[in-house]
Length: 472
Image 1 (cartoon, rainbow, N blue to C red):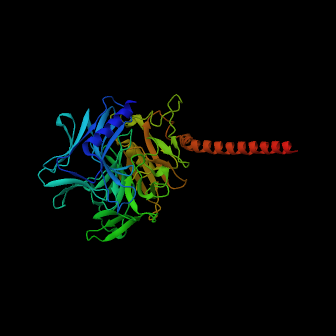
Image 2: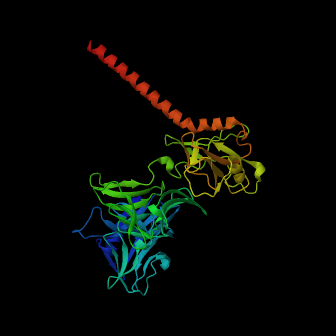
Image 3: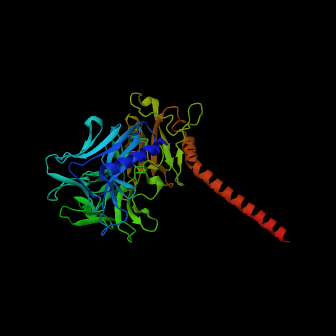
């Protein structure tokens, strides 16, 4: 009941402060948003301030600007947000949340600075545009939130501060990126514009691994990218288009590109007038197991897109229940005599850009990881297209993105575990046992499906026989 009262209070404040929505807010305008007195998990309150209201050129759905408050980890955050329909496409608190209590204020000051403040004028966020002749805040038809002077010159724009969404018409220069933050983990994803490619990265502390990339042909360099009606276009320093990621659906124009905060996948979206929702016309990764966090650390994504833990046993032959229950987060300080490498057959990691050594045997590769206390896994590959006899070793400081692959690819993935966690490294039963654990989920799924099919056929046959007997 309290939740609904707070929402009603917010709506009343919106009506009192600025009446109906418009596409412009002028200097001297101030809006307040009430913060609930008690914490309610899941609470979200929004006061919609502006929308793009040119009905003659309106494309469904429209852009709207809101002052929002949201429950987060026992506190309330306040932010300025831009929405395309129900999709949040920009947020002032994306990288640094402003926590406040009682009330949140949005003000475009007389000297042209847009500010978010709490009680007693405590500053939470600002554009830093004081003294630049700002006359108004406006939402453009592209979704770009801008501060303009009397000559309509842009003094500040949200397009210069990308979050996890790139809108149609938006340009990103080289060395800029989108960032998304999945819940319940310290890791985060980035989509980065580099001079030779665009790529997706998994970031964990100072560690950074790519898991997808797109490069222009002929080693051409990128200066900026722009989201057009047909996809993401890549340009050189002469503003010449050198490559394009094409959206497959061309009936409706592209509306935005987004980096998913749950999966880390990159998608390009259009609005379907049939389903009345946004649908993906392009996805960088089309298989669950190609996602970097499809499973928990030390989990393996199987052919059925389900997760299975790496098979670890304690000295007492007790199976580990959690994927990383018996694996310490750090190995430094324990010495190499207390750890060993566990080899996993027919698995690989989707993470790339790990430190690599060439002409290294599998045994040497394992020893390199053992002798580096920060190393937690190693991938040894034997043979490639250019040199079938070559051997390479990649050392990893993060165990993630492990997936099952076909046999015979010449790959060996090894993880560092405490000694005594598994059988001895040289015992062939370890390899065989791990293989069984990797496939156990798939095996059970097949058994359940077949069992259900048999039950259905038997049950249907019985019903048919009963129906025949009743007719006679």
